[in-house]
Figure 1 (cartoon, rainbow, N blue to C red):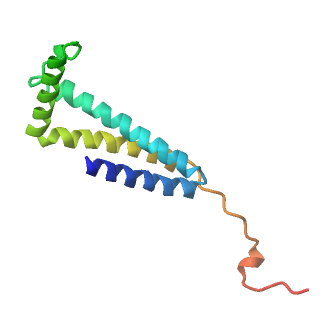
Figure 2 (figure 1 turned 135 degrees about the vertical axis):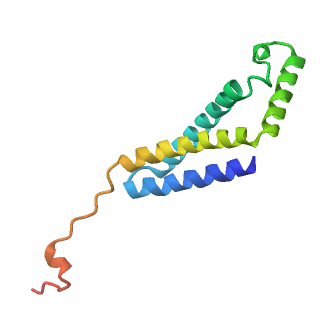
Figure 3 (figure 1 turned 90 degrees about the horizontal axis):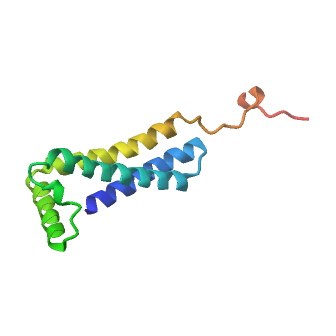
Length: 129
């Protein structure tokens, strides 16, 4: 849990710095990074539950209104994720994919335009009047 939050803050900071170098709004791109990470993170949970935990979790009971059925499904999911650490690793990699998508978008943007320096200014000499 804490690892995910620390990882999310670090990745948002990395894209924040990258956005500053590109001349973009760094706060907006940090927010977009957080949203992309969370969306892909939950997509990873969905992917793992549907494809990897099909034999452990009774998916037909997910739409049940009964409170005890929902508790049983939640316990089955906790047990499935605790039994195999690769499930959590897969979910983390999905979240990392969201960060990498935003990083790719930022890298494709042109760099901030630097002010042009006249060739005489590069010579080191000052023009005297």
